[in-house]
Length: 194
Image (tube, rainbow, N blue to C red; front, side):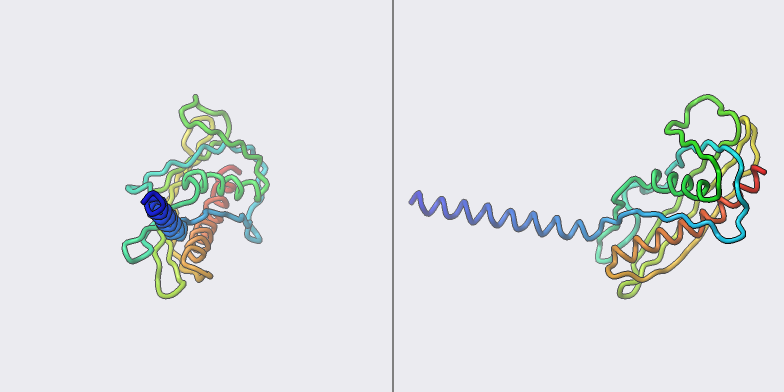
């Protein structure tokens, strides 16, 4: 009898481990790594200013997910979306020649010189047909100098992209859509600081 109970426990434990592995594999397929590669377009104005960049604020209604995978599944970000957007802007400004100082806190006293801040209310990706994904992003970028308002602008974009998997397609389309918006935003920031 004890041998039979031991076998049952072993089978039960193996079954539970297999179920957990299956669930982990399914959830891993919905996690999107957020990556970014800056690229200053040819003819973009070069920057000679020192700019303080404050973290972008995530104003999405649903800050947990990135969009729908289909069949009731959702896309989740591998890393913090606000950090992804903020560091992408940092890299775009740096690629244009700006000396960029990143400040982790937004509640500090007024910074001297040029300060760039922003927020976003839309970062969304949906699957399309086969291995196609479509992304929508909307962000706001504000420039101040010595605590005084200089300019504020909203950037909105939508793109589609293919990938080797739905997660790969989602990662590529989110990255390319953010790059599309930040190329314009960084160029406008550089123009505003001339």
